[in-house]
Amino acid sequence: MYVSAGWTQISVDGDLTFTVGDTQFRRSFDRDRDGWFVGAGIETQLGWLGSNWSLRGEYRFSQFNDDNRRFTLAEESCGAACTLRERLELDHDIDVHSVRAVLVYKFGRREAAPAPLK
Image 1 (cartoon, rainbow, N blue to C red):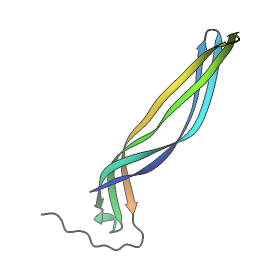
Image 2 (image 1 turned 45 degrees about the vertical axis):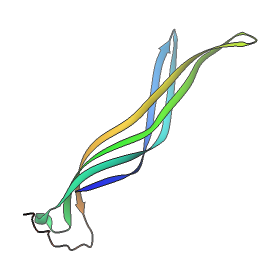
Image 3 (image 1 turned 45 degrees about the horizontal axis):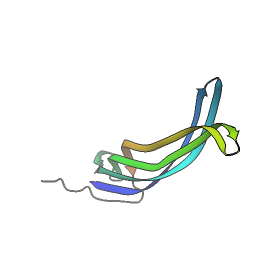
């Protein structure tokens, strides 16, 4: 059994299209997001494939930085001290849960198979 923790990064690409009144707006975004992860898993050696092969099963939770965006859709002056703005605000969080099965080959290692638990 093992646990893991560390830093992770993803690239988020997206297109957003929406209509306000009779006007259609389109916004695109491309951004790398940093975050952290924690995980736990189990690894077992596969004796039938040779002593260098093992199989891992792992669960991982990753949380990435919040993303807050403001888009100004329209701006109109209503006098010397007044400006009217129509804005779209996006606030989203990205959390990722993943389960993985991994077949591992360890180069240059010749280990004897561990004794079974009694």
